[in-house]
Length: 201
Image 1 (tube, one colour):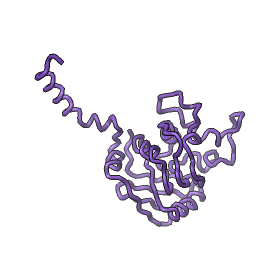
Image 2: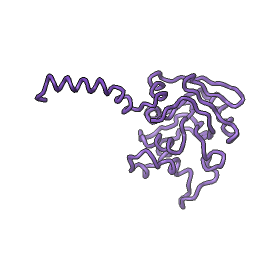
Image 3: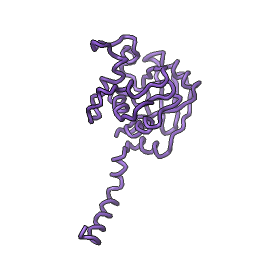
Image 4: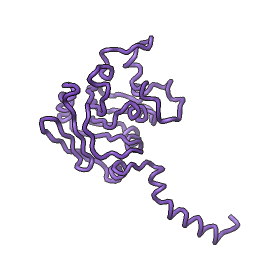
């Protein structure tokens, strides 16, 4: 998993509440178990019409936001079913950070396991960042996971809370498999001892 330390990038404004996982990646794209290739279908039903043409008004189809790395969204982002394909699609598009007043619990946890930083901030601070995001590609937000801050181009700084274990995992690029591999020497030693003391197993 890619490490997350700091990020300065374009933020796309999505001032909708209750953006659910089916909106993020519709159910017809859940057939794959690959983590790549889903970015083209991120927000598919909002990005494309029934003929597959881009809807110009959708934020990620606008030229200034095509390379957004941050989403600023409304409350309860990632609600709905617990599909892990939702963070896969965000990451494959290029989104590394989502800022919102609140997140659905399972989606929130899945973000950390896939290298995305979900940041919870009070509504009034999200509103300020939303206004910054509406300025387009010239207004980039800066996120510092070590310092736990989000900064605007004009110097406003907002602090956020994050669980220390989740922070450790993101900073070091550790998903569940990576955490297990950190203990590989201890696991090997245990298995060797078990084989020696219980050879019949």
